[in-house]
Length: 417
Image 1 (spheres, rainbow, N blue to C red):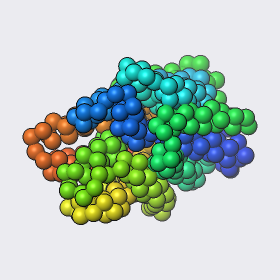
Image 2: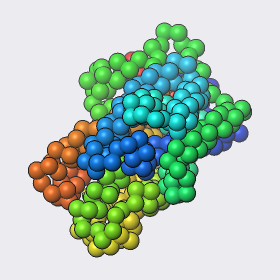
Image 3: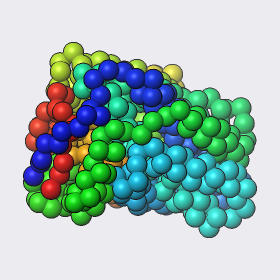
């Protein structure tokens, strides 16, 4: 149930505070993505440094640590989402940055697997809050016609963090990479000065009878739960790619018959270079079509086609493998649009909870998806498993987004009851 609210703070022009918010959210997401993909790159060298050398154990323990990070992000998404609606988008944004920055600095000094496990969970918990809080803040500070462009800019700058991680990992030791990511986050906290809180949040906070940040509201009534589930399933194909194809690219390269070993850092660098291009393209397409849904569905179909192309052609050479991984990355470029949609689907008193929880529920879909991939790979060849599971995720994603209402022109000044 929605209730319109009259808010004098509703933005009609782009203010200095809004511009600063876009800059801080973009840089925050840059550091966020830098840290998220570090484990994908550093999985093998970091575990070898801890004494793990068996290839099967490197693969299984890598999945275990990834699951812990994603589980932490799921828990953090709910926690920081609640805090964002109760105490403000800005406090949540910087609280999350502080948590994952400290965790990554400590990660540089681990000497045992159990320490790695704890810090991957804590880092994931902190990483969960940044994107949703940033997107919510930017969406509420920008005029309706410009918020899609602003959130696309945030995502495009942020995704460059993954590219930077791929480059940095080629020149620094694994523990130094974690240290760099943590220090970057702490430096970012200085930019908090001058950033203003959302006027919509302030207006709703004045209404003492309005429930704010209650995650149970996402589960009832059933129509609202279905709305949230469709957002999560709509983004699932992105994290099939991120959880399977990017992280286990070396194993997929072997299955496809690549002549030499695939380098994880190079995969991330090529893949996320494509993601940056795709994210900008999808954002602009959404503006041109004046539709979030159509832009997402078009990119989901492109992703399905690129997976087919990759499985059939990537094994011919290492160079072709990396470039086709870049094409797949570009096809997952609807991430910013799906996260923006998550915030637009829900009222102001539940928006941060939804916009922060949804991306992390999407990321958490990588846990069952990778489990299914491992299970099917034990019975069928890796290439066929990757192809058909990827296509299945894309089909589910298209159906889910088709069930959502269009939100491109929606006024965000309303409440959920």
